[in-house]
Image (cartoon, rainbow, N blue to C red; front, top):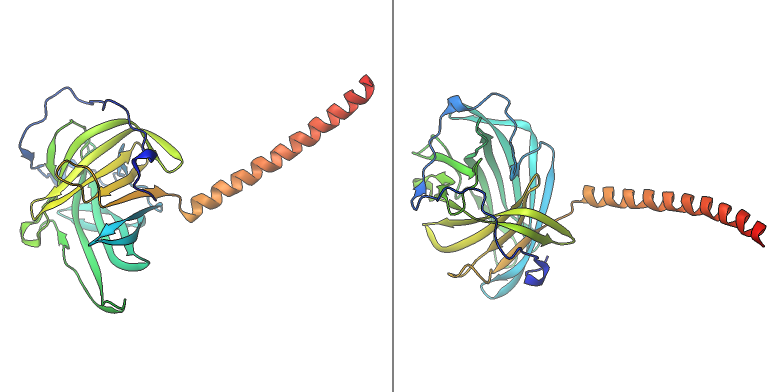
Length: 286
């Protein structure tokens, strides 16, 4: 993982997906359980949740002047999630590690309506607290919330239709200090993450009025989902404190190695066949 911008290949001009001018105010999505179909998969172009899939994001940066290494392991569970506000959810498990220690485990609950909007309906959180020597000293559930409890309302984690500049609530749980807002910031023609180039990447700006200085960009690739996160942006939305990028999971690395091995075997067989043909013809020519 690296935060150097040389690894990014960005289009000079962002693509606008909708001609309609985005409203200046922050949209408060209206939730209606009748707009959900039982068994509806979460297959939004930029936020697909396929049960059983795992992705890993690794980050390096600085916190309070100290260099840190972080990792997030994201997995879509293959069991149904809880029913919230009358809608069955999909469970997205997020395990966050800092310098090798588990610091947070979160079960996020999402559901997609008939129009393709992906709703965020809550999260169950366990935060792990350590002393200066790295010993676990306790846990808590700070920032946990569920729609329908304590006045909390759901929001969009990903709209079905992208309107550049549109602002919307991702969650509305004021009593739990969860008021994240998203803004469809741009669509990038190209973005390099690691050794892969993604096209038509959506960039979303996230903020929270409870943390005025906390600004981050999230980047989503079509049919893939989250591929990059820039946390701790300054007021000009530059110089992130830490950058996360999607890396291959163990299964993906094993699959790539397996394919590479097959290609090598096939190549050896082709070489052997070619050698035989070359030898026969070459001998005759001589």
